[in-house]
Amino acid sequence: MKPFLVGFEAIISPNANILILGSMPSVASINLQQYYGHSRNTFWPIMNALLNGNPDQSYLSRKNCLMSNNIAVWDVLKYCHRTGSLDANINITTAKINDFNHLFHSHPNIKQVFFNGKLAEKLYKQHVLPSLDHQYTYLTYCYLPSTSPAHAALKLEQKIEAWKAIKQSMVK
Image (spheres, rainbow, N blue to C red):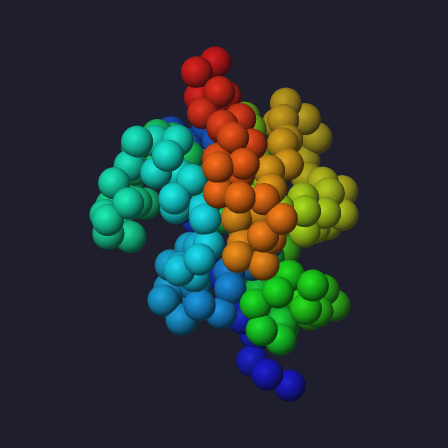
């Protein structure tokens, strides 16, 4: 069997109050060691549009921009076996879920969780919620359309419009 695909540490600051969750980094992202590293993934263009970022900035600058806006990024899965990059090819029987009780305990300002795609939401609801401490019932959840290049049903402008929910939650 192929070796496990291992996800990344969270992009997170001590004051994070919004968490964006994906399922598992793509092969391109893992090779680059960057969240949403595939050149056709729309995550960074969307974040640039929402946060007035510079599309030519380095990965470190992109991460710093998220953190300075109190936005954290992580994945539901810590590791798994998957053929290729498609979420549909994740072998859930080999998957390990990240420790969300620890994350929410360590970052008590997080109040909102946004899911980058349906699988992230599904995995979280099936595997995280049942084991999440009851003290975290204050968390609110919102599905957002996937930024993956495999999710081409929506144009970039439509995805940006949907993802404005993050910007709106920052104003509250």
